[in-house]
Length: 477
Image (cartoon, rainbow, N blue to C red):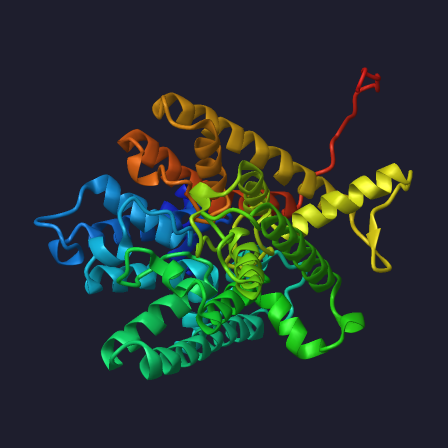
């Protein structure tokens, strides 16, 4: 800002007898500030996640966070914080044994924050404090949820927080009642119920059960795995779909996004269940020795969990290679857009599938359930799929270099699991080199934000090209 004093012209030094001297006038000129790139979307979301990961790493480095003498190694703290914030679940040290209750509480807090997301929490806090939600904040919220409209964003934010917190609270009450009545004393029942309700709904895959086999100790407990499986399923279909389900209540009234998520999710769940049940039916190291009903239950749970949560009630390192390849496909696709899940998202895969069907049927436009999809959304889906596949290939190549001698399938599985923020592993996570841990940590981070950033960037308005080149065909196929 510049202050300019205007005292008249230079010839006014000699005044006529009746002329008053000109008065000094203060003129304020304000320079228009260019909008800082630091505060623009989508970068602010990346800054937030980096800041929270740094904060979480610092907290986990405190001596009171771990059960070892002194502070844990930096790479272990960084890897765990990244896994918790990105709700992945890959760990280099067992959560229940390596971290104290204080450290586990920090991990649970990071899971909750990572699941809700920065813009949802920030907007909700502004509403609680009675502050006005600016247009810029509405833009960020709209892009974070991948919506096309501005209307009711504030109300939607409140609904998301209320629904997410309410479901996790309900899951806690159900698990606590069962744990307290049949398994644990009061204090332990409260803690285990709270931790796993948060971890399950946010599809995080972290386990705090003080048992060497983790969740597998409840392999035949249909109530526990049923509650956890339900929380995983609800968290993975997105807040918008859950709200639409409660509001519309009939399939014909659902939004197109809800229809695609429901149909796509149920199709993937059935495919996963059928493949796991058939391929592992006679495998004594997984479900081969279980009764038929337990085989069905475990197969359903693993199909739900494999897509993004990463909870395991069988030793997948002993599963058939065909089962693990299928699990990689499920992890790569992941859950629904604007949910806690990772992967390229079931919405993206549904759009790609519909576009392929339209091309095979020689249709110019992509349509589903009587609605036509914009060309730009189809392009976005193809871009997310191709970029994500290329990135996973790059990670696999890097891990093949840093983890020389490791099983190739296990390396590919680890890379896909990290990118899909799933958390399943064939057992090589704890054996990764420090450089390999950093690569996986970066993969989890990009897997959490990468597809979202591509979608947000493409959703922003672009200028029309001022000129076009002459067309020329190339040979394809």
